[in-house]
Length: 120
Length: 247
Image (cartoon, rainbow over all chains, first blue to last red; front, side, top):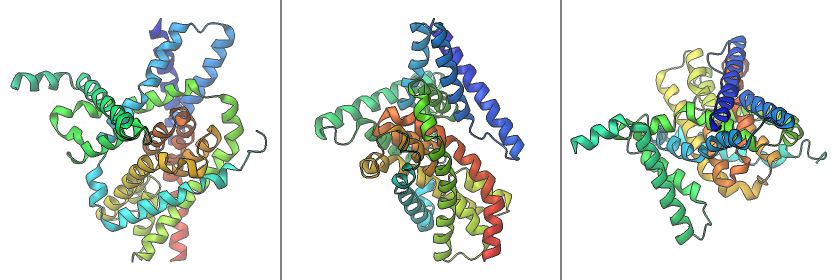
C-alpha cells in the first residue's frame, strides 16, 4: 500500500528533524542543524535494508516516489512566497554583497570538487 | 465572485496545486515552443514564481488572501518533506565518495561567504565590527544573518540588510545555477555535494539544481542542510571575535 511508503518517509523525516533539533540544542542554537540531511541518510539506509530483506513492495516505493516528484512544484510555490521586494529594496549593499559573494562561491566548486575524486 | 473567493479561501492548498500545475504547463510549453528547451521549463517556472512574489510583500504572493495556499505548498514543511523523499534516488556509495569533499566545502563555504561579505561591507564604508559581522553572516544565508545580528545586538536596519543579502543569494543561485553549471563541472553527484556545501542556501541550491538536473537535487540538499546551522554556530562566536580583534 502506498501509505506504507508515505509513513516510512514521515518516520525518517521526523526522526531526522529530532536529531537535528537535538544537535541544535547541544550546540546552543535554536532550531535544527542538518535535520533534512539526517532524514535523508535514514531513508537511504532504511530503504537499502528493507530492499535487501525483500520487504519493499512496488506500491510502497510509489508512495515515496510520488512525494519525491512533487519536489519541483513545491520549489516553484516556494519561489512565489520569497520576500523578493525586500531583496530589491535592501539597497546596493544587499545587491552587491549578495551577487558578488554568490557568484564567487560558484567558482570554488571545481576547486573543491577535486578532493576525493581520484577514488572514482 | 464572493462565492468563488470563499471557496478558494477554504481550499487554499488545492488551489495552489492547480495554480502551480498551470504555471508549469505554460512554462514547459514556452520552453519547448520558443526556446528550443535551451532554458529548462523548471527554470522558467521558478522565474514566474519569483515574479509573482513581487506582487506581495514579506511573504510574497501569499500575502494576497486568495493565494494564501501557496505558503502551505511552498512552506518549509513540504519543502523538507519532498527533499527528503528525493533521497530515494541517491546512491549511498556516491555520497560516501564525496563525504570528505562535502565536509570541506561546508567549512570553506561558510568561511568564504562570511569574510568576503565582511570585506565588501568594509569597502562600502562600514567600520563597526557588529554591522560587518551581521552583513557577513547575511552573505551565508538569510537565516544566519538575523540570528547572528540578534545575538550580537546589531541595529534593525543592518539586520534587514543582512536578510536582503541572503534573499539575493537565494535568487541569484536559483537563476544562475543552470546557466553556470556547465562552466564549473556541475553535472555529477560529487560536484553537487560540493556545490550544496559551498552555497548553502537550501532553497536556492535545491531550486537551482532542480532546474539544472533534478537527479542532482538530493546530493546538493544533503550538504546544504548543514550550512545554516554551521553558520549560526560560527558567525556570532568565532568569526565575530576575529573581526573584533582585527578592527
